[in-house]
Length: 254
Image 1 (cartoon, helix red, strand yellow):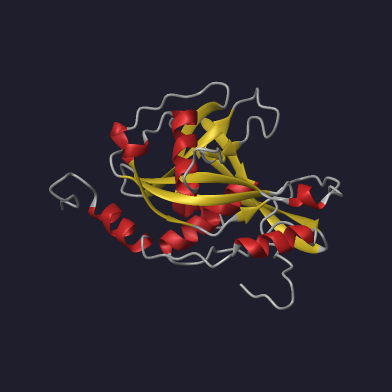
Image 2: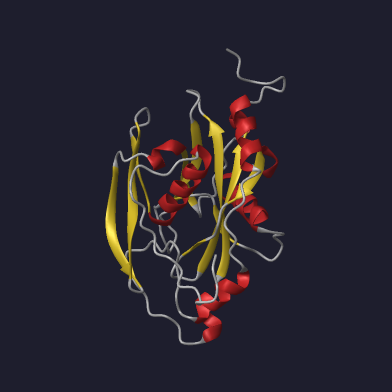
Protein backbone atom coordinates (compact mmCIF):
# COMPACT_ATOMS: atom_id res chain seq x y z
CA UNK A 1 0.00 0.00 0.00
CA UNK A 2 1.36 3.40 -0.97
CA UNK A 3 1.41 5.66 2.10
CA UNK A 4 2.92 8.67 0.31
CA UNK A 5 1.23 11.61 -1.35
CA UNK A 6 1.95 12.97 -4.82
CA UNK A 7 4.99 14.86 -3.50
CA UNK A 8 6.52 11.67 -2.13
CA UNK A 9 5.91 12.73 1.46
CA UNK A 10 4.78 10.22 4.05
CA UNK A 11 1.08 10.52 4.85
CA UNK A 12 1.84 9.50 8.41
CA UNK A 13 4.28 12.38 8.84
CA UNK A 14 1.88 14.84 7.20
CA UNK A 15 -0.92 13.75 9.53
CA UNK A 16 1.42 13.96 12.52
CA UNK A 17 2.56 17.45 11.53
CA UNK A 18 -1.05 18.59 11.20
CA UNK A 19 -1.95 17.24 14.63
CA UNK A 20 1.14 18.62 16.38
CA UNK A 21 0.49 22.11 15.01
CA UNK A 22 -2.64 22.10 17.17
CA UNK A 23 -0.69 21.20 20.31
CA UNK A 24 -0.45 23.97 22.87
CA UNK A 25 2.11 23.55 25.67
CA UNK A 26 1.06 24.48 29.22
CA UNK A 27 1.30 28.22 29.80
CA UNK A 28 4.42 29.24 31.66
CA UNK A 29 4.62 33.04 31.80
CA UNK A 30 8.05 34.65 31.87
CA UNK A 31 7.21 36.57 35.04
CA UNK A 32 6.60 33.31 36.88
CA UNK A 33 10.11 32.23 35.91
CA UNK A 34 11.53 35.38 37.41
CA UNK A 35 9.62 34.78 40.65
CA UNK A 36 10.90 31.22 40.76
CA UNK A 37 14.50 32.27 40.27
CA UNK A 38 14.27 34.97 42.92
CA UNK A 39 12.89 32.37 45.31
CA UNK A 40 16.02 30.30 44.63
CA UNK A 41 14.01 27.36 43.40
CA UNK A 42 15.07 25.88 40.11
CA UNK A 43 14.21 22.96 37.89
CA UNK A 44 11.02 21.37 36.75
CA UNK A 45 13.32 18.72 35.35
CA UNK A 46 16.76 19.07 36.93
CA UNK A 47 18.92 16.23 35.73
CA UNK A 48 22.43 16.20 37.13
CA UNK A 49 24.53 13.92 39.27
CA UNK A 50 25.96 16.70 41.40
CA UNK A 51 24.84 19.91 43.10
CA UNK A 52 26.45 23.31 43.06
CA UNK A 53 26.35 26.29 45.37
CA UNK A 54 23.74 28.86 44.45
CA UNK A 55 24.79 32.43 43.64
CA UNK A 56 23.98 35.10 46.18
CA UNK A 57 23.38 37.96 43.76
CA UNK A 58 19.72 38.05 42.66
CA UNK A 59 20.72 39.15 39.17
CA UNK A 60 22.64 35.90 38.77
CA UNK A 61 19.35 34.03 39.05
CA UNK A 62 18.23 35.24 35.63
CA UNK A 63 17.76 32.16 33.53
CA UNK A 64 19.71 31.59 30.33
CA UNK A 65 17.76 30.66 27.23
CA UNK A 66 18.43 27.63 25.05
CA UNK A 67 16.54 25.41 22.63
CA UNK A 68 16.93 21.89 21.28
CA UNK A 69 15.56 20.34 18.10
CA UNK A 70 13.55 17.13 18.28
CA UNK A 71 13.82 16.21 14.61
CA UNK A 72 11.45 13.36 13.76
CA UNK A 73 11.46 11.32 10.57
CA UNK A 74 10.04 8.04 9.34
CA UNK A 75 12.44 5.09 9.33
CA UNK A 76 12.67 2.39 6.70
CA UNK A 77 10.49 0.14 8.86
CA UNK A 78 7.81 2.83 9.14
CA UNK A 79 8.66 3.77 12.73
CA UNK A 80 9.12 7.31 13.96
CA UNK A 81 12.76 8.11 14.73
CA UNK A 82 14.60 11.08 16.23
CA UNK A 83 18.03 12.52 15.43
CA UNK A 84 20.56 12.53 18.27
CA UNK A 85 24.19 13.51 18.65
CA UNK A 86 27.13 12.38 20.72
CA UNK A 87 28.91 15.43 22.06
CA UNK A 88 32.58 15.92 21.35
CA UNK A 89 35.00 14.55 23.93
CA UNK A 90 36.82 17.90 23.68
CA UNK A 91 33.98 19.87 25.26
CA UNK A 92 34.41 21.08 28.81
CA UNK A 93 30.88 20.10 29.89
CA UNK A 94 28.91 16.91 29.22
CA UNK A 95 31.69 15.70 26.93
CA UNK A 96 30.92 12.46 25.13
CA UNK A 97 27.29 12.44 26.25
CA UNK A 98 24.23 11.98 24.03
CA UNK A 99 22.26 15.13 23.34
CA UNK A 100 19.67 16.64 21.04
CA UNK A 101 20.96 19.18 18.54
CA UNK A 102 20.69 22.60 20.14
CA UNK A 103 22.28 25.22 22.33
CA UNK A 104 22.10 28.70 23.79
CA UNK A 105 20.14 31.49 22.19
CA UNK A 106 22.09 34.16 20.36
CA UNK A 107 21.28 37.79 19.75
CA UNK A 108 20.20 37.29 16.14
CA UNK A 109 17.71 34.50 16.91
CA UNK A 110 14.08 35.53 16.46
CA UNK A 111 12.71 32.86 18.80
CA UNK A 112 13.33 29.40 20.23
CA UNK A 113 12.54 27.78 16.87
CA UNK A 114 15.22 29.90 15.24
CA UNK A 115 17.73 28.94 17.93
CA UNK A 116 17.08 25.21 17.55
CA UNK A 117 17.35 25.25 13.75
CA UNK A 118 20.48 27.41 13.76
CA UNK A 119 22.22 25.19 16.28
CA UNK A 120 21.29 22.04 14.33
CA UNK A 121 22.78 23.60 11.22
CA UNK A 122 25.98 24.54 13.04
CA UNK A 123 26.38 21.20 14.80
CA UNK A 124 25.36 18.60 12.20
CA UNK A 125 24.75 20.53 8.97
CA UNK A 126 20.97 20.09 9.02
CA UNK A 127 19.55 22.58 6.50
CA UNK A 128 16.75 24.56 8.23
CA UNK A 129 14.77 24.41 4.98
CA UNK A 130 14.46 20.63 5.41
CA UNK A 131 12.84 20.92 8.84
CA UNK A 132 9.11 21.54 9.16
CA UNK A 133 8.79 23.02 12.65
CA UNK A 134 5.35 22.11 13.99
CA UNK A 135 5.30 22.97 17.70
CA UNK A 136 7.28 23.60 20.87
CA UNK A 137 6.97 21.88 24.23
CA UNK A 138 6.92 23.48 27.65
CA UNK A 139 10.38 24.61 28.83
CA UNK A 140 12.65 22.36 30.86
CA UNK A 141 15.00 23.82 33.46
CA UNK A 142 18.30 22.79 34.93
CA UNK A 143 19.75 23.90 38.23
CA UNK A 144 22.36 25.76 36.23
CA UNK A 145 19.59 28.27 35.42
CA UNK A 146 19.23 27.12 31.82
CA UNK A 147 15.77 27.35 30.29
CA UNK A 148 15.61 24.77 27.49
CA UNK A 149 12.71 24.78 25.04
CA UNK A 150 12.23 21.58 22.99
CA UNK A 151 11.26 22.39 19.40
CA UNK A 152 9.61 19.59 17.42
CA UNK A 153 10.34 19.49 13.71
CA UNK A 154 9.47 16.99 10.98
CA UNK A 155 12.11 15.85 8.50
CA UNK A 156 9.98 14.73 5.55
CA UNK A 157 12.93 13.86 3.31
CA UNK A 158 15.54 12.03 5.39
CA UNK A 159 17.64 11.24 2.30
CA UNK A 160 18.13 14.96 1.66
CA UNK A 161 19.94 15.30 4.99
CA UNK A 162 23.68 14.90 4.48
CA UNK A 163 25.33 15.24 7.90
CA UNK A 164 28.27 17.62 8.16
CA UNK A 165 29.57 17.43 11.72
CA UNK A 166 31.27 20.24 13.57
CA UNK A 167 34.10 18.26 15.24
CA UNK A 168 34.51 20.88 17.95
CA UNK A 169 30.98 20.14 19.17
CA UNK A 170 29.82 16.78 17.81
CA UNK A 171 31.53 13.43 17.60
CA UNK A 172 28.69 11.48 15.97
CA UNK A 173 25.09 11.74 14.78
CA UNK A 174 22.66 8.85 14.94
CA UNK A 175 18.96 8.16 15.30
CA UNK A 176 16.79 6.17 17.66
CA UNK A 177 13.14 5.09 17.73
CA UNK A 178 11.07 7.73 19.51
CA UNK A 179 8.69 5.18 21.01
CA UNK A 180 11.49 3.58 23.04
CA UNK A 181 11.23 6.47 25.48
CA UNK A 182 7.76 5.29 26.50
CA UNK A 183 8.73 1.67 27.05
CA UNK A 184 10.07 0.17 30.24
CA UNK A 185 12.74 -1.74 28.36
CA UNK A 186 16.51 -1.33 28.61
CA UNK A 187 15.74 1.47 31.04
CA UNK A 188 17.07 2.13 34.50
CA UNK A 189 16.52 4.94 36.97
CA UNK A 190 18.31 6.71 39.76
CA UNK A 191 16.72 8.45 42.72
CA UNK A 192 17.83 12.01 43.26
CA UNK A 193 16.93 14.94 45.49
CA UNK A 194 17.07 18.63 44.73
CA UNK A 195 15.88 21.47 46.97
CA UNK A 196 13.95 18.98 49.08
CA UNK A 197 12.24 17.43 46.07
CA UNK A 198 12.61 13.73 45.32
CA UNK A 199 12.74 12.82 41.65
CA UNK A 200 14.02 10.22 39.22
CA UNK A 201 16.48 10.45 36.39
CA UNK A 202 15.97 7.94 33.58
CA UNK A 203 18.69 6.13 31.65
CA UNK A 204 18.07 4.32 28.37
CA UNK A 205 20.56 1.89 26.85
CA UNK A 206 20.38 1.97 23.06
CA UNK A 207 22.31 -0.32 20.75
CA UNK A 208 22.67 0.05 16.99
CA UNK A 209 23.06 -3.61 16.14
CA UNK A 210 24.18 -3.19 12.54
CA UNK A 211 26.91 -0.72 13.51
CA UNK A 212 27.72 -2.47 16.82
CA UNK A 213 27.48 0.84 18.66
CA UNK A 214 26.01 1.48 22.09
CA UNK A 215 24.73 4.76 23.51
CA UNK A 216 23.46 5.84 26.91
CA UNK A 217 20.64 8.38 26.68
CA UNK A 218 19.90 9.90 30.06
CA UNK A 219 19.16 12.95 32.15
CA UNK A 220 17.74 16.08 30.58
CA UNK A 221 17.85 14.58 27.07
CA UNK A 222 15.94 11.49 28.20
CA UNK A 223 13.43 13.62 30.09
CA UNK A 224 12.73 15.78 27.05
CA UNK A 225 12.34 12.73 24.81
CA UNK A 226 9.95 11.07 27.26
CA UNK A 227 7.78 14.17 27.11
CA UNK A 228 8.04 14.44 23.32
CA UNK A 229 7.13 10.78 22.85
CA UNK A 230 4.14 11.19 25.18
CA UNK A 231 2.86 14.08 23.05
CA UNK A 232 3.51 12.37 19.72
CA UNK A 233 2.03 9.00 20.70
CA UNK A 234 -0.66 10.52 22.93
CA UNK A 235 -0.01 8.24 25.88
CA UNK A 236 2.08 8.32 29.06
CA UNK A 237 5.23 6.23 29.55
CA UNK A 238 4.98 2.71 30.96
CA UNK A 239 6.91 3.81 34.04
CA UNK A 240 6.71 6.51 36.68
CA UNK A 241 8.46 9.74 35.75
CA UNK A 242 8.47 11.56 39.11
CA UNK A 243 9.79 14.94 38.04
CA UNK A 244 10.44 17.70 40.61
CA UNK A 245 8.02 20.60 40.40
CA UNK A 246 8.49 24.34 40.44
CA UNK A 247 7.68 25.89 43.80
CA UNK A 248 5.49 28.71 42.56
CA UNK A 249 4.25 31.68 44.58
CA UNK A 250 1.04 30.71 46.43
CA UNK A 251 -1.22 33.04 44.44
CA UNK A 252 -0.01 31.74 41.05
CA UNK A 253 -1.02 28.60 39.22
CA UNK A 254 0.12 27.15 35.95
